[in-house]
Structures are given as structure tokens and as C-alpha cells.
Image (cartoon, rainbow, N blue to C red; front, side):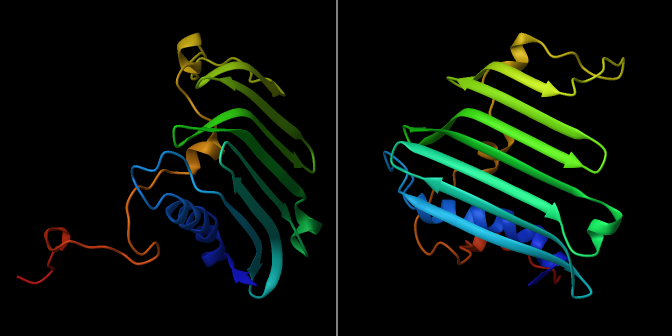
Length: 181
């Protein structure tokens, strides 16, 4: 079991390690194949309060990622909730290109769903339930906002070019900042 202070950093760290390992060479024509299957338990004082998973599967020409999470244990007595996000798409010229993204969040009282369909980096169809209520403090969504974008999950899978050990830091002497005078 992971404590909550470690688990909140484990998911992004795991995904970063996967992508570093997959993208060891900056000039690789395509992504290497690989899979990350991470399962998490969040505890508070040793008592489970949440669980989650993140599965990323990258092939030669396709990719998918799914994240799930839910309250667990004693916390479910006070607050129920679960959520799921998923994306699938293609791998083109070494880049992840989303095709469809879905997200659903269920609380004890409400359900939220989002669906985005992409073509060439542009959102071609979208749906949100319940729909956002217009408000003067919100920026209205325009066609230009749907061009050259990605979904939240694909955007979290960062391209990290380089070579060498994928888990060791690489520092140059000009990057070192001394704290002594």
C-alpha cells in the first residue's frame, strides 16, 4: 500500500518513466511498443480511502490509456465517488494522435460525462453532460479553441527525448547552482 503523499506523485512519475523508456532516441521514427499497468491504493493512517489504476498501452501504430479511481473503505460511508477516463488513437511520426477521449465521474449525487472526437489534432465532435451553464465569467467556446489541441490524458504523456539511463538524473556542470557563497 502507498501512503497518500506518495500515491499522488506515483501516477505521473510512472507515466514519465514509461515514456522515457519508450523514447530513448530523439530521432526514432516511431514509438517503441510498451505497456504501463499501475495499480494504486491511497491510505490515510493505514486505512484505505481510495484506489486507482492507470493503464497505458503504446504499439507501433496505435495507443490507448485508461485511468480509473474510486473512493474506498471507510471514506465510502461519507463520500462516494468514482471516475474513469480513456483515450485511444494512433501513433504517427513518433507522436501520439488522439482519436477519441471519454471521461465520466460519478458522485453520490451527480454524474458528469465528456466525450471528444478528434481528427488531425482538431476536435470534430464533443458532448458534455450536464452541459455547462453560460456565465459571464466564462470564456465562450469558439471554433478556434478546437483547433490544434489534445485531450488531457494524451497531453499528460509527454515526449521526453534523450539517451542514456532512463531513471538516473543527468546534470551538466552549468546546470548546478551553488547555495554557498
